[in-house]
Structure formats: structure tokens, C-alpha cells
Length: 61
Ligand SMILES: [Zn+2]
Image (cartoon, rainbow, N blue to C red; front, side, top):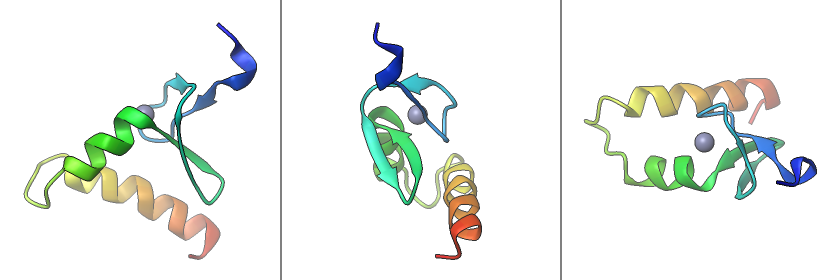
């Protein structure tokens, strides 16, 4: 496994190779897909919103 290509996902906290960047933060493919599929009424939704809000606060988006 090539550690240099791994980045730590801000949602699950796991080092992952594939994912997307929002500003300078990394979200892995599986979390991104899970987030897209999460509905507002889902109990996981506030968790994802909180994570994204943390990025927004840090970068004043
Ligand atoms: Zn993740």
C-alpha cells in the first residue's frame, strides 16, 4: 500500500486513497456516496452537516 497517496477522510477518519476535496479537506468516496444518499430525516444527517459546517467555519465559506 502506498502511504503517500493516502489522505485522511474528515468524516470517517480513515486513510483512504480515493475521494473528493472540499476546500482543503478530504472526504473519501464511500463517505461522499453515503452523504449524497443521506436524507434530511436520517439520523446520520446532522453528523454529516456538522462535519461540513466545521470546514465552512474554518475557511469562512
Ligand atoms: Zn470517509
